[in-house]
Image (tube, rainbow, N blue to C red; front, side, top):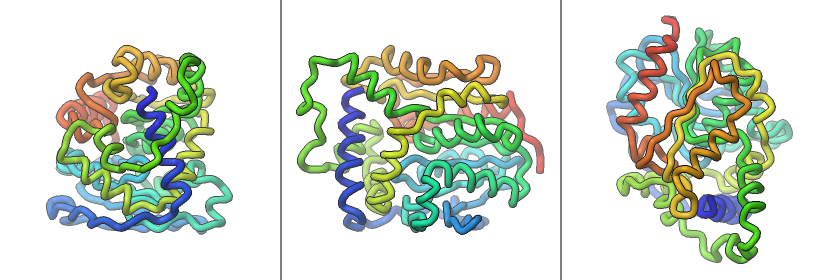
Length: 314
């Protein structure tokens, strides 16, 4: 997955070292999403870990966006589900205009802080076994909750996230010894639009991805990518005791990895998840942002999961 490798290196080097980037106009949130919505700043144990937008009525679902993304990436999912479910859409600290973590909170680490804050949020809001749906970084957190807090959630959907990103890159590099160091280096000029095009086929989403990137705190983006590159959830996956669905985008590695290689990477990375609790579904015509490239397929998968593993009424 060389193309994604280069993108990660670029994001880490550029965002991680330059701090706050130039501000671009943020996207307006459609009125259909903002009506009857409650905004909650989750400030628990001294950690303003995320903001939450709550809409809809019914069983609870928590939606977590990825790195340098806002909760707005779940807009079409909210529209598809809010008639039947209560949706808690997070925007994590430092992303999409939300304030970064405090220095004290960073001492605990971003990934553990976010995971623990979501656990506290579930308890304090008295949510009855919500299903957690996460994209990318959010998918990692959904897997972490399924592995470490199965008693609190009803299930998890991992949308194109990996439990050990750094390990995948290390294996890829080991299997490609002929590639020079220069070929893996980050480009001299960071091009956010080129990165967005590499993560979604849907042209109408490219500016949205870029806007979220520039509304996010650069230091946070770089540090969180560093944590993800070192994190390895694979041993903990054996502790999963709730239904988990992993949705993989088979064009994510294009043109450097074939769909077969991408699928094999997912199956290898999640091999420790108990087969009775975990299953895969793969979409052939989507890059990383499945909600951009294959929203109908995504919503069909989510609704089928919710139907098969019905969450309880509040």
